[in-house]
Image (cartoon, rainbow, N blue to C red; front, side, top):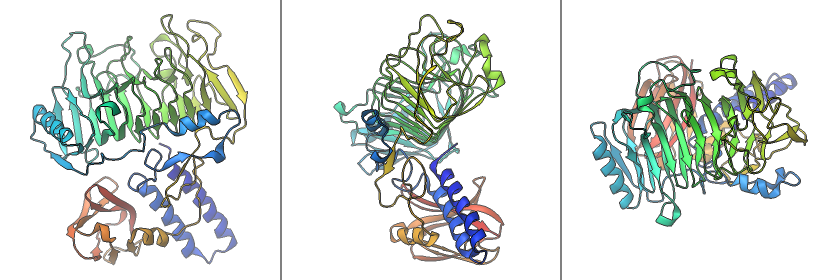
Length: 512
């Protein structure tokens, strides 16, 4: 997956190489810059207002494109209004592994009735046998891949799709402000792996939507993994201003006709950012409510499909899009990187959508000239209208534009804009000073003392060192002193985490 932090690393590595040619004796400075790049990468999801979609991102007028000022301002507002965050009421409840579905639902309802907050799901597998309805101003939060939501619903051939998790009717009119899901793994109801290119319903009695967002506003999915869902992994309908960010959506059992197997955006003003998407029937933007959505910097091994009667003014910018040879003709129909309607019952976009500056790979490429702003979808796909290309209309604008033009207004941010370049030269020491934190030395040798200075607001929190596979190598709880010494015995690249309540600071740590 692509993010600004990878781009920052590229900029910094280039600077390092150039600097090395100028003065080989200044290796200490180069090491600091390299460590800084790793710090920036590690902080991605944890610093306030650092990642696109967090609070603090605003329209960057310096990236204005002639004739697009109004559209760019609205695109800059896509996603959760005010950014991904917890509800204003700073309350957390614990969801335990032993709780059944009814008890979980009661706990969520009580949390919402009291004003909202965060429901922390401890590690373990939660088998879902009845739909969990997330009420207003509630965030479901897991521990990452160790918090597993397992679909055990079945429609029993009733013809009604089930929903594993549902957000329904959550709008500002009923007092809802923000809700969502972060750091959880969702798994479909069957073992094994579905055939990725079989365009049929292989498990038709369990065609469940994993996460359904219906007539709601300001819902987010952040660092969520959805693997081999029964039916569609994610579906939104009406409402809008949702953010789906840093998620992995991979595989679905039922990919038959009738809307099965879709990652479907049927709402407006949504931000789809930095996700990894593959092995579905379609990633689709459709229906009249789907307008002014932004699909930005994702890896999509799938068609992006303006499937039926979308509202237009959706932006597809700076993604990696690939159609491999197996997908290219799956189900007997040709697939392209960006598509329009392909059935008689489907209609064109109501007004133009825009496709710009994507990396297009694999088979059946479309919209790959990065100097062109492509417009569509106009007309049916060639399987219904031979020779047609619904995105053949374009204007030449050059390759150095930014249609999704945002910047971070926070003083803590080191990211300048959607270009992803460093705003200023900073050192690791400056980052540490900004947070009252010091880690020395880094790298550290096996058996050598690692000295830590903790920020004041992290006292009475925990310190944890984990390897790249998530194994805990060392853990200290309820640290009451600012200065802490550790000794590590295993070589390798690790993470050191400083944890207190909902806040986590995370660095890369080298042990030699």
